[in-house]
Length: 132
Image 1 (cartoon, one colour):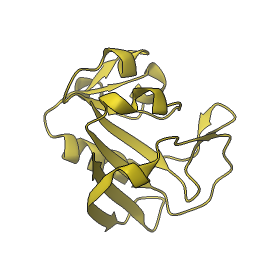
Image 2 (cartoon, helix red, strand yellow; image 1 turned 90 degrees about the vertical axis):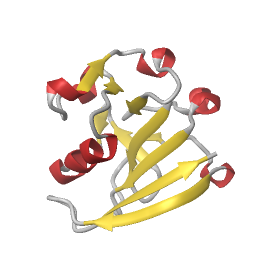
Image 3 (cartoon, helix red, strand yellow; image 1 turned 45 degrees about the vertical axis):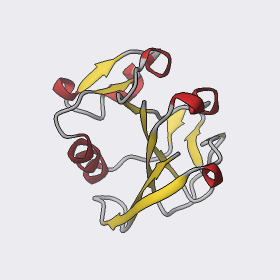
Image 4 (cartoon, helix red, strand yellow; image 1 turned 180 degrees about the vertical axis):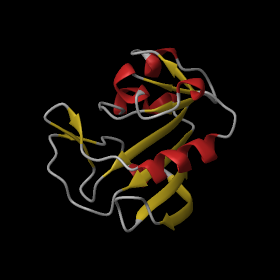
């Protein structure tokens, strides 16, 4: 599977059962990175994306196959690490309150690309791409 996630400066992903932030330019960037491929995600995340581009499945991390794109907003992700082939990690470049964190140790991964772009509500969003 190919994981897509967004984190703050401390790896935070969620706070009190809610996403930390959202940005419409980041969503457009995710769709551009994914091309015509469908993106698996939970019903919670599906509202961020046009319905034609998603597969809503609350167990998408379990059911995703090789090469399938998965947008995850809620950890834990570590239990699925052995099935992850690539990670597209969007970083807010801000510190938000968080109680759930990205739990994959990226020191075991190789960063192959990094791109910064201006978001709609964020001056700078960084997209890092990792492979095993």
